[in-house]
Image (cartoon, rainbow, N blue to C red; front, top):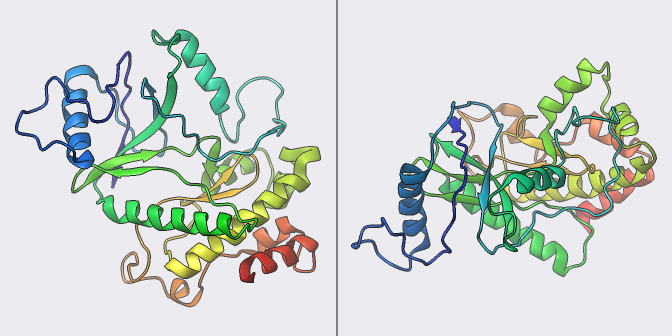
Amino acid sequence: MKVNSLVFKGASYPKVGTPHPQASPTRSEGTFSNYASNFVREFIKANFTPVERKTTDESDSIEENKDDNRPLPTLEGDTSPKFEKTGVDKFFGEDSKEQAERIRRQSAFKDLKTWRLLHLIVKTGADMKEEQFALQLISQFNQIFKAEKLKLMLTHYEIMSLGSDFGLVEVVKDACTISSLKEEMYKQNIFNFNVFFEKYHGKNTEKARKRFCRSLAAYSLVCYFLQIKDRHNGNIMLHKQGHLVHIDFGFFLSNAPGKGLEFERKVPFKLLNEYIEVLGGPRSTLFQEFRKLFYK
């Protein structure tokens, strides 16, 4: 599987449903998937210049004029301190709001009220339909949790399948994978996940731990019911505010990578000792809250 990144500059996007000037007259109207597939191919060919391709999880940005103000779920009052008072956060990179303001000041469309910075990954080499279906199911779980007024946190992001082996993935902002986070932790001589929480969040550590607890319980339930597999540290992210975000749902229900790992068949969800340590240990108040959230 390969992840390609493109830089899109100075483009004006028509709204969905508006015929593209270069679109074929025989294209069936009213079908968003057909429109999106043709639109992406023709628009990239006509307006965009590809740059060096990357095979990492890094993504570039797209400036968009579309009137879509749906933000990714975030928590207000993010006051997480950085290890350095100046410069970019070494663990989570540049803050998404600061990045958007910086790019908007340089944009030719900065005066438009509908201006928005959209982060996307162009993913190729895999059928995105199954992963898109998994995100739709997880979104239903999130609606059920809210309807029942449960303090469970799931982060929704968009996936759009545009063909048999390619699609678009919305980037989860202000977060990084556990794998890349630990690499940076080791560089900073931090070898314990709980110690990282305390050093990074400072006086906001307890709030971050509560977010971690509620997201851990939510994704544990989702992984249990949907039998989501392949839960390694590259497929689990940590948001800078403390909550977990699972990504890459290519294997769930009866599907598993390869022949399926033995321990994944026996363990219904991922609960590590280091996660329990962040909660304060098996006798802590937060761990008891995790248990209640899981079976409530």
